[in-house]
Image (cartoon, rainbow, N blue to C red; front, side, top):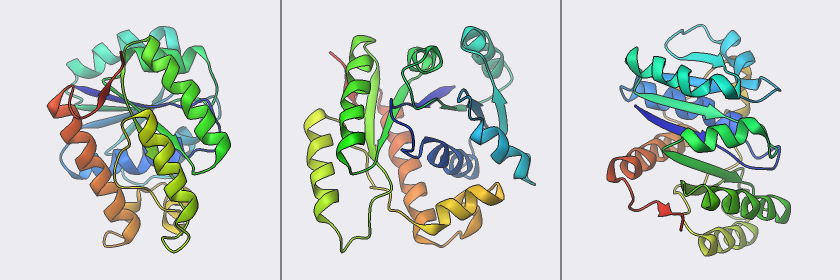
Length: 216
């Protein structure tokens, strides 16, 4: 069983949106997936209520119960756990970081998110955890200057995931309907982005240390 946690000390970076569509894409690729909602806002719990398909379980777990719950999930045959966390430095975020095989740090291409990403990175380094950055909610390709600056900043900190995730209506619409973007428009650009993201993450986890940056 592999565990991915989306973590950042900044709200609004799109953790829940990415987590939901990523979980769906992984399930479509053959993984047995469960989503752990550790965010008090319970966005993914509400998303699950809107779903008609029950192929992905969503459960809210308190930090102190997380290790035992993960053991039970593995015994039940779950192959992938996706953990969504609060956009703050919290016990829940720290608990998720400690158990994750890979931590994803989503950031929008703006100064506030990039500063928060550095803070999260320092915490992950102190825990000696594997991590990678994901540049999210990027403006259209023709408005590339701000994205390029974000890419440079995150590459300087190490471990930037590809592809970059663009700001697309499909992400918001899929979330509203309790879907992943691959279910909403299977041939759409957002769906292709998320499939590529899952493929990239799977390769990284399968390779162990490389090419994900190992905290020193």
